Length: 347
Ligand code: ATP
Ligand code: MG
Image (cartoon, rainbow, N blue to C red; front, side, top):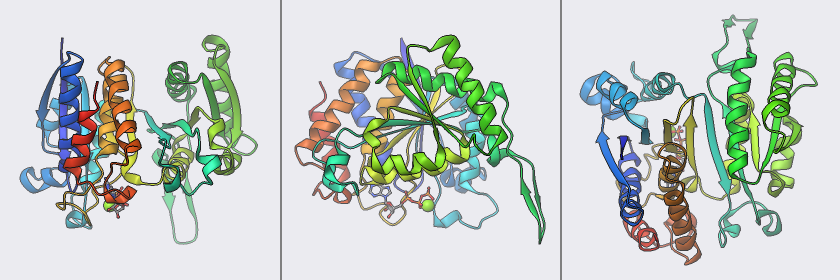
């Protein structure tokens, strides 16, 4: 079976880190006898420059026909303030793909504890996954905007809550079997609906998963005080936006963290959490790990190749343990030499 990947290098360091991810994917395809086919498309600022559209129709069609979509990064100062925005392409792509759940794992690799702002003893054993609802809530509600009064609507339906909760419970079954659902049910009506819908799904289908509710303000503290207590953290769009940025600093470098966006069915969108990093683009020093671990998530969640994903994650952990790395994590490697160190450890 050949797996089709729509490949969108994008802007800034996007092409550099996605090339690194592709080299690692090719290495693991060989050791695991996978057949991967890449179709490359213009996207973001690069697509604005050549096609006058951040999401050209050829790109969109190619993504919809693929088994998975891999993205480097979009945007940059060149397009800031322009009539066409690269980031609009990303919103439209997410919508076209119907991805309503954003998954961001956070872990602190052995030997990397010193990069974390956490005390060493708290940094040990940190390994959790935030599942954020991506297409509902306050960011998509009606708004009225006046000089003296403004209003943002937050709306959720039971269906929207249940489908993202299902992704969280299923992810927990493949991890440590725990879900903490985050809301503000002591104040917000949408949070009480959230709590009821998640409870009902847990009762009906996921009683084997250990389950708790945490208020969002408490969670903001617990992520710092006791991050190792958590496995899967499920939350709505606005809270998830804030908590995942908080989580991203725990591991020490924005260059290390991957993400996946999933919907119904297996096809997902995979990208490092960092942006286009225009300040370092073209210098060959971008950390490729966020992109490489996003490729591992792609293998696990969209391409039914969990063992190949494990092989990549183990190789990354091994290279970090050997002290390899780019300058953002205190290493002396270039993007290319760090990538080669990781490839050498693929089994
Ligand atoms: P966005 O595009 O989401 O607005 P941003 O401009 O806020 O993102 P980034 O582009 O992620 O942020 O860059 C933030 C900082 O992190 C920059 O100094 C950048 O050089 C650094 N950075 C981002 N990605 C990497 C990477 N892969 N390796 C090393 N440093 C990185
Ligand atoms: Mg930016």
